[in-house]
Each structure stands twice: as structure tokens, then as C-alpha cells.
Image 1 (cartoon, rainbow, N blue to C red):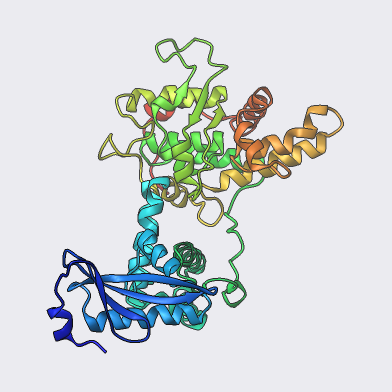
Image 2: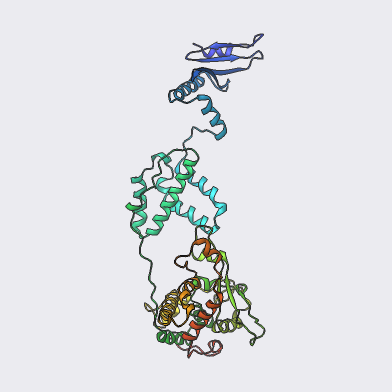
Length: 437
């Protein structure tokens, strides 16, 4: 067997030679004095030679360890040369990465395909709920019971949907690690049955008869609130869109209205909600964003003309009172409803239920008198930016603007029903506010 002294003393000769150690390991000394460790073995009945590294970068002790590792690979029925080649191509490290290290690698890889808001939400949720407990642990040490204990902590604070989303993110991190060659069991797989079921979709309080809606619109029109908030509430009722979409609505999103000529034809007026705003409003995680065109009734156009006198210089149609560069607050319309006595009876999001219920029931009553009513249920869903039953995601992407003539008819029909007896929009600007009850 070789000694460190013998290895150091080995000098160049006229031609290369080798110094044998043991169990197939030897030191090769070239004619120029370069020294390298080599391991000779047999695989599939053929003699093979594996270079283990140069001396002195690889010491005698290191060379013996590498030989033993190669012999272990042989016992597993694999060729050590292939394993060494794979290590050079893929990269090998003796350092075991922590869950947090791998999670941040995964996040960095995905970030280009995500919207900034979603990318921030993903890493923030991991930093808040997972890294403090599991971040420093190697992936192989995290099993199902351990992960479940963390997810149940999240559930116990009432964040059931958050627990499910984090489970999905942990599962994706393990899939990424295994794609990189980790070959580790994914603890987030097949554990849905051990989690609390998702709560039923929230049912928002909503008025479901036209008479009550007309009374409410009159109450809000004359309420003790800013004209911008009252007109925003009127526009929300007329379009039945999500409150966040109305809040962030910009003048640039509106087409086919001649603002300088109040008597011009606005029958083609359209509010186009950009794909990015739809994605943010619906918290979409994929790239299935879409532009959402909303036909505007004559009453909706009248409302926009009225509020433009107040907010036309702001990018937002309904800006906040403190700054024209920010929209009205998230709770401005809801607080207005509550102050006027509609708490628990109707909320801003409730207009969607009002519109869907009343228009669908009306269609069912009249079915048979107009063949167009057969498609109205699907068209109403399209108007609300819902996915109609039976329509695929790809079809939905290309059919967002479909059936526009009928959508305009339904939008105008809805506006005519609920605005009967309502005061003109300009009176909301010019008339004094009624004192709060």
C-alpha cells in the first residue's frame, strides 16, 4: 500500500509509470511528472479505468474514498464512469440543500411567467407560514405528518383556502426537486382528504326584486355622501360588475363616447376591462387572462358624463376624495349602503346576484316567446365574466366578445327596469346632500 511520503516522492521518469495502492487504486505518474489517481475495475466482463482526480488536489485518503464510492456504485450494478460523467454534466454537491434553498430556486425559476402581484404572494406565504417551521430542514426529512401539522396551524386560524394554496406550492417545490434528480417522496401528494374541506362559496346579501332595488337606488342617489361615491354606486348597479373593477376603472378603458357632444350617439359605448385587471381582480394564477368587454346602457353613459365633470382630469373614473391618482376606497360604496340602512340586506357585490337572478327568472318566464332567450343564460354569465356551463376555457378565451348585440339588449333592459323613476345623474352633482338618517 502507498504512503503519503511515497506519493510525494514519486518523480518523473523517461516514460509514465504507476504506483499501486490497493483494491484497484493506483497513482499514475506521467513523463512530465503529472500525478493522477486511477481506479481499475471490471464491468460487464470488461476491464475499465476511472480517473479519480489529480494529486495533490486529491490526497491519498481522498482517492481511497472515491475508490470506495466507485465500488459501491459497482455493487448497485452501475458503471462508475457513467455516474462520474453525469456528475460533471449535471453538477454534484456534497451539501444537502434545505427546503428554503430549493423553494427559492423554484420561485426564481417561475417568476418570469407570473404577474408581480402573484409572485410576491407566493414567496410571502412561504416566508410567513412554511420557512419558520420547515425552511432549514432537508427535503427528505419532511414527511406527510410534519407537513400536515403546519397546514393545520394555518387552518386553525381560519385560513382554509390559504392552507390549500400553500399545500399546492409545497407540492410544486418537490416536483421541481425531483425533476432535478432528487428522487424524494412528495409529502404534499394525496393529503387533501386530511385537510378541512373548502367552505362553500360566500353568498352575498342582495335585493332580488325590482321594486326594492328602485327604492334603494333612490335612497343612495339622495344620500349624504360625495357625488363621486353615489355615482359609482349607480354605475355599479347598472353594470353588475365586480366592485374592484369599477373602483379601478379608468377613462382610457371606455370607448365610443364623444365626451364633447352630449347629444352624440353612444349606442356603441363600451367599457373594456383589460386582461391584466381581470387577472388581478379574479386572482388568476395561470395565464388564462382575458379582456372583458361590457356594453354600456344609455343610463350608464349618462352616469359617466355626469361624473366626468368632477373627475375628468383624473386617470380614474371614480377617484378618492384625497387624491385623484387613487381610486375610491375599497369600502366606500359598502359604507354608503350601510349608512342608508342596507346593512345585511345588500352589499356592492350583491348586484351580480340581483342581475343574474332577475334576468334569468325573467327569461324563464318568457321562454317560448323569443328564441333568443334560449341562449340568454349563457350570455348573462358572459356579461358577468363567468365561465358559462359547457363552454371550454379555450372557447371562452375567444368568445369573450360574442353575442354583443344581445348583451347590449340585456344591459339596456336591466337599466330600464331598475332606473325607472330615478333622478337624472346631473341632479346627483347639483342637488344638496340629504342629511344622513
